[in-house]
Length: 305
Image (cartoon, rainbow, N blue to C red; front, side, top):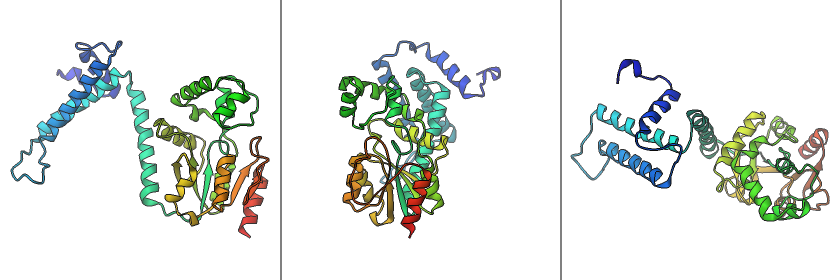
């Protein structure tokens, strides 16, 4: 390569690779077969690099490649990763943002799995407690009236929309970062809990295993709105978190969903519940309702004594 052609930014590297790759493939008309070939080429380059490293514990005489050959192997892998990104229509800016989001997720999970000691925990639900869900989702499809339901099947009846259509809208909303666009609600809750000496564990039954971006979207939302927390857990059944955090260390729970509140109550937990249309008639043991910050602080003070 001529010295004048050496590029010094990732945007230009992406452009340079795309110019070369255009000799072999049409980025505007991707197809599964070409995508599969690119992935197989990446596997082959990884295998070639592995062959340059003496990694087998059961072999005495193994080839240890030169630095330059290993460097070239890494470059080959890097080029195919860029090719795959380009073929999927991923720009450098999108890849960079996703990299930092994923890195934040990894750091958060590492911290809570290896570094944190969980004692005097307050477990805080996100949707309906800290966000304006489900109203935020419904407003995205043009429905702005208050609702009294949480489950999708009940919501479809309440807003008079076909269940399959509502599920389709929600799928699209999740896939396109809908959780990041929700407005805050009762954001004083985690701050006051931290000030009262609790470790704040965020809990959510958002379908992280189905939509992998949910971890990053949720983390970005918490950081964007300066919500203090110590860890973040996703579980379809929130009481399952007791298998990861000792139940005796969880001093209280903040939750709005009647079905989850009932389960916590059955476990003998203390539950602080923000009043809303779908839970105000709930009768459970250990429940304390609040409507605003003064009432929330009053409950915290009473629990101390």
